Image: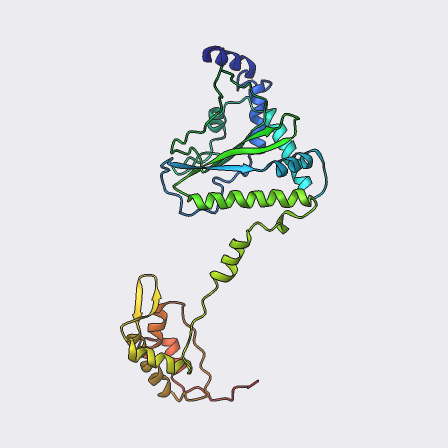
Length: 336
């Protein structure tokens, strides 16, 4: 069949969009209902922020699901149960309904639904899972063994595309899933993509072992990832010389007065400057009767400017100046 003939057949099949009884109108109504509230973009754990304009540069990672897990997944798909089994049932229903309404061309669907357009990502969806599980005719040539070979093109149409092909043994039993992940290099490093696939496989192994388990209870991290997250990245202990905080601060001022002590946005305050602020503020408090064991309440914005303002009594607001003009009453601080 030629493309022109296929187009004419499709137009005859779908009918006119303006006809409410046409197949086009009914399928379009289905997708309008199904895609209500669809997020503009799927939030994935990426390595880099999404650029304003996608480059469509991509990489690819070969992936595999072994024959044992493949067979267990087939068995799980044929059964029904609680938790993951219920989710599997809902996915099956959604997929079958989508297949029954797949005749509307994607371009026309996008035009009719009119989602927010962006040069940064694909409209409506940014991830795709393709499973090739239909029988194929093998090409046989005399004296030649023919097999498909994936040729990386260095491009990626969307953020992530997982393409898997189902293989079976001669007796029809599961022989594993083989495929490739195509990913946008604007967003992902190869190591991240491999880790994401590894977590997906761990999820599959967990649910075939216990289909009744809650999905949120499945451990997705490998032992190495868990150790890196909980131990290595929290290994922040450092030797600190003994002494009180004021003594350690004075030592830092003496040894490194030009080092950065406070940082907020683009503003940086050195230890020497911060020490002058503290001394000025201490003198301002002493002049108002504040001494050891006195209780002083500070209400300051969380910023360098707030700290600077607190050390300049002459720049207090009139209300606060009146409040501070009378020395505060001393009182005992309850001790544990």
